[in-house]
Length: 299
Image (tube, rainbow, N blue to C red):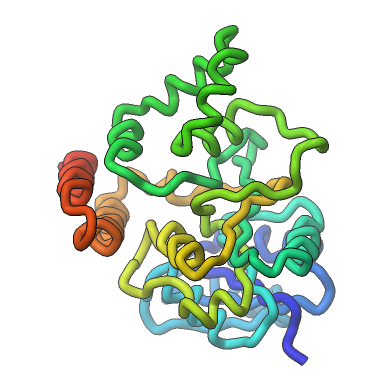
């Protein structure tokens, strides 16, 4: 019998976080879940730590860094499971929230992807669900309008602004994450455009239908692209209201790294070309120009 759940963790020089990550999984995963670490040619002690301290974990050692999406696909292809949980190597479970997610999907056959909420190590909220990218959204992000909006909704004006912003697709998930206190009366799952790949559950059916992540995307944008594929195949994408996953957010630590910025720029350019170049030429030109402006001097 295939396992109900296979957990895939992609590593690349994660010696500082992998032990804490795997320990949290050991503590809170459902019984009989299998854990697979796919290492992208780390040159630190990541592999040694996994081999020494976690002998029950399946370790796949790639001879080179093949990127986040491809490495996840390698892990998923290595085992047939009912569900796959993609968990970042700098992320940590706090309780048995994965069981709640699996039970929810069992009762909702139209759900293909579930995202878990994320928080920073200080437990402040971290955005984990988003609206699809558009030229307007990209421009507003570059102008840091989202920061201004959050300050406004937390001010005395918030009671007026929040009901309005919750009706705007590109603002809805951001406001819900950063400007609202979640409570038990809220619905267990909410439909969203796309969720972050740092803590994402997908079904075997969706993986077999889509093939997983687009392997032409090396880093960044692959999670949105997969959620687009899910929607086009009539699967729902939802974010669950469960205990958040703590996420160190390694990308933030490397945002000034020229190599990482170059990889991000290349991946986002590919995603924009894939979804806009053919049928939406005006939006495509706008987004390519905005991307170039955003990354000028960083690549």
